[in-house]
Length: 252
Image (cartoon, rainbow, N blue to C red; front, side, top):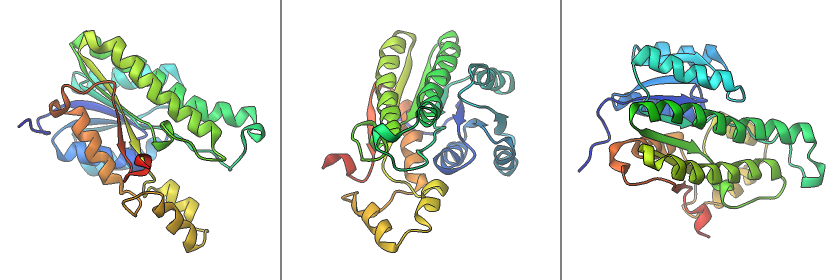
């Protein structure tokens, strides 16, 4: 049996909160060294201070090509190499809107973070991994990467794009021994979701929970466990995959 532990060095974008924070904590528990690349340096630094020398905080806006290159450079400068990357930074739609009612500015905002950000991150990460003989990249998509819901056209399109980009990158970089996979979480108990449900009647939460055949919303740790598996040698023959971690949401 292949172990999930053994020190690896990686970067997690959007790693200061939510799913990203859970990934950082889980990977650090397994003995890996992590760069938290987050738009908000203060929160990233607080987490790094808590976890110790195995974690470095770096400010990065994934919509900036230079920031994505810099986060990879800082990882190599500080820890010596880059073995894996978790591209988790993302955003949601501000309001529920039909396709024809989404403003161009809102469309471009969501695409810039959710799709351009993954493209720029993968590009920078793969270039470095190619130099060092391989690695593993995990892109965080969503159940909305393979199905759709009303009122979230830009988000759905961006997450479908992440799945397609993942498959294309997996084919491009397989000869370089770089694995590229996507995780598709269902609804997850993150600050973003909690905030959205806070002012809603209890029936709304029950309806969201009921979308998952397993009957509940996921915990961030459950997504982090799947990520830890995918970056590890235990997943050495998996590339170009979309792994649903959705409580059966997309099995319906």
